[in-house]
Amino acid sequence: MSILLTPPLAFLIYIPLVFAIFFVGRGLAGKGTPSEEKSSLYSSGEEAPTALAAPGYRPFFLVAFFFAILHLGMLVLATGTLDVKMIPYLVGLVLALIALILG
Image (tube, rainbow, N blue to C red; front, side):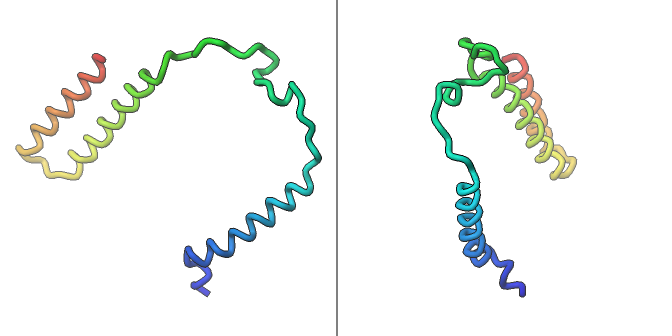
């Protein structure tokens, strides 16, 4: 019975199942007709904005780098022993966080 749980066999079982569900669902769905309303952007009845809310991904990447450095740095520091050898890593972590905060 455990052979059914092996990934290759489960994959071979699920592929026909997915195709069957796909084709049954396609058969149950109504026939669609293309229209201008279906291809236009929907924004709760308002005109779609023409300007970006945030100019690029820079603010997101600063926050992402901040948390990545903070969490991964603390993970590295937490898995080691409290030793004099950890001081350069801690100082580097603090300097990297300060550099990210100041931009």
